[in-house]
Amino acid sequence: MNLTKRQRRHQFSFVLLMTVCTLVILPGCKGDIYVKGDGFEGKIFNRSSEHLANPVELEKAEVMQFEKTFQKSIGPICEDYIQSLEICPACTEYNQRETEKCNFVLQHLSEYKRQYYGYNDEGNKGIEVYGIYAKALKDSTDWQSPMQVIHRGGGEAFWWLTYDIEMDSITYFSINLD
Image (tube, rainbow, N blue to C red; front, side, top):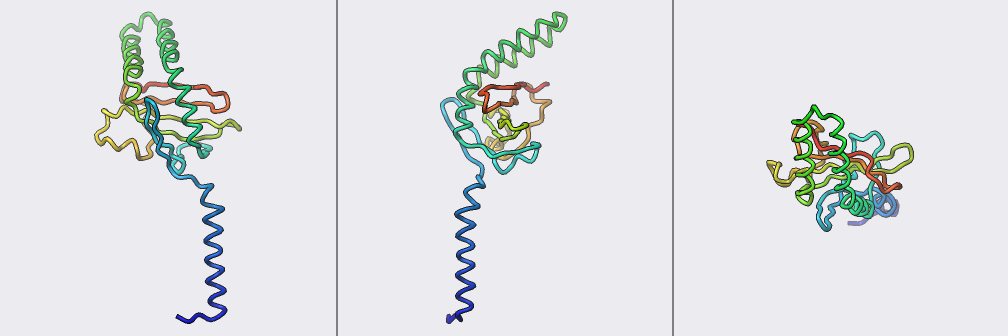
């Protein structure tokens, strides 16, 4: 195929534009990232954070740091929660169920698949994490699709938390209500 000088110039311009777009724009657009470590498996959803007011992209290193903190913190978090139940001594049945849910999460922590979403809260970068008990899913790969886990229902099959990256601390933790 014989191209005119003008056609070759347009073809070159197009190739140059595509190269620039690929080298400059695409590296800043991270896709979803699979992560796995000692006692956890999950997926960072950088393209599926529409449910958050100010979504931001996460780095794998940020999630790995979160997991280190989480593995150390979940026991004390559950202990504090169980102790807080003593405020309502008349709620014996409720307190017992909540204690069972915490203990279940602690015993099966490595069986929860994680979904990680990045967000910005007034300049502080954080991670919203959903824990999904793999055996509670109809399809074992469902956790790999972005979904916002419903915060009510499911008992100990789902938990949800927020983590402040800069402070390296868990700021909220909840095991779903029955």
